Image (tube, rainbow, N blue to C red):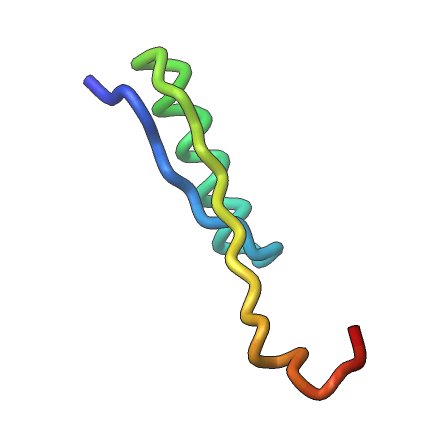
Length: 49
């Protein structure tokens, strides 16, 4: 049914629950899981490189 599942990862409880659900769906349909973490770099604009 599913070939690929994209799951956001941010360290929250909601992301953890989503990952558990994605793992279940992937095991039932032999889908590939792709984890995505996005970092807002605007937050770090004042820090030295």
